[in-house]
Length: 135
Image (tube, rainbow, N blue to C red; front, side, top):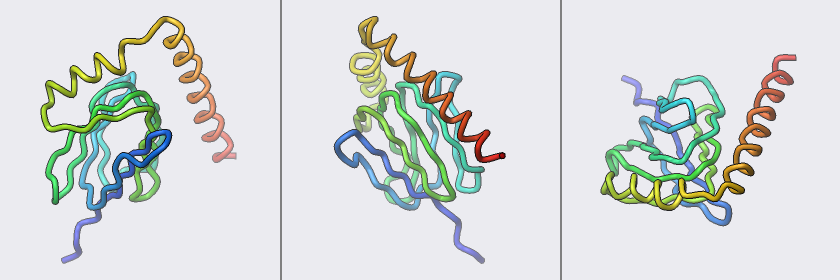
């Protein structure tokens, strides 16, 4: 019997590596359109993440919750890289939801406008890369 294929997850912040995990069996992330799950054999993808709770599961730690700010998730093969502005780890899910509201969602109008423009630019870049890849 062949051992199960598992993913490697790296959560990056602007100036440090927040987490570098191996043996990850599943990941659940949030986008503006809703939550989605990743399993090891899912096709490669790129997603713009919304502030929320990222969940991953591995054998060593079980199910782990991380509050993350906006960012990008990239899955290539068995590697998943999540690059976000800020992340908070913890075990109390209610406390993490509160941290997301307090730390990541309380933005001034100017910050919201800048983030909106950046999200449009990021989506356009992803679309153009996909078009370039297909040509």
